[in-house]
Image (tube, rainbow, N blue to C red; front, side):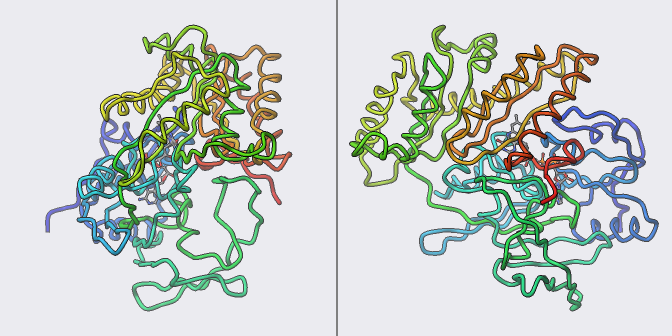
Length: 466
Ligand SMILES: Cc1cc2nc3c(=O)[nH]c(=O)nc-3n(C[C@H](O)[C@H](O)[C@H](O)COP(=O)(O)OP(=O)(O)OC[C@H]3O[C@@H](n4cnc5c(N)ncnc54)[C@H](O)[C@@H]3O)c2cc1C
């Protein structure tokens, strides 16, 4: 048998020592690239016997340092990347994929067969295993929920190389215990997490917990701390005929936020009967600073816009595209959206608008890299309708401390990323202190300190002890 591919060369190891958090201090002795589940199990068994720490690496797009090794061995999964054919079953389908497959390849394989894989955490170069390990969400989780909702089964290995295969519905919590069936016939009896989750729509600051929970949901979002995920069966939906995609520009942020309330259908109590209904799958905010950043990169954003909302609306066969357009136009008018707003007229234009949404966090990360500072981004979700309060509280602290900041993201889910842009490494230390205060403030008020990015090694305090 050919020896498994591994390397102790510092040059090979170097590209696994950080992620998009730009966290520094990562180090490892060796990197392994298993090409089969058997090879992967061998590495885990050997490391377990020799008590060498193992860090699992997906594509390294995480923003909290989860895959950054602190010694030991890196297990890089990019060679375990096969994707099966979607299998139709009545009005849905399933697809089996290996953990190293890039999300964009999975999305494309689904689309080619007329299906949609709903999770879309913006950065499609992420590996599917990484998105499951972090329970990634993103713009479309507003309608479809996070990755967890789309995972039907998982197979992989525990830290000592013991294989497992789990199917949704197979193992649920009973009397505070979860009985995990292992492939060697044994059953691992473990206590179910019993902390209360926050009342926000999204949460990723620690292990999932719920009464009667499914064991598979404990592994999803466990950030590589409980098991190595090797293969997953994912659920697909029929693909819409078209995704109406647009960016509505507003002169004031409150107008944009009011638009979101109405687009979620939550304003009928305030304005009487609703003449129109929209059903977006994404509602994303760009604040004034975000638009400034995009302008500096040449995006043709009109000069009077100080906030914008990105939206996507699926149009299924038999639906009236023009009726959806009219509904959005009416809503946009009502909240004073500018004529200079954008509506994609073709698939290519829609792709460009989505690319612009992706461009924003990329622009932020590049700015931070240029300044030589690590990422400081809030990931706070708040109870419905209180985003403006949170923004006001955060901005008051940041303006007083004179720290440049950019807010954007998943406003449909009451969840924004506010990035602190420190000027240089010295200023970063001050920004980090202010950032810790912001997270402390959020957690104390029952908000979720990490709604989608996870804790990694960058945010150990993202959940208050409850
Ligand atoms: C521009 C940009 C935008 C982003 N937007 C979003 C967004 O909107 N929503 C969102 O949720 N995230 C977002 N992210 C974060 C990131 O894309 C997700 O966290 C992604 O799911 C990480 O996948 P990865 O393969 O890169 O994982 P990595 O960064 O390699 O690893 C992440 C964690 O998962 C563990 N892990 C990886 N693979 C496995 C496996 N097979 N088994 C067990 N553990 C494993 C690692 O050990 C680590 O703890 C964004 C990132 C960027 C750069």
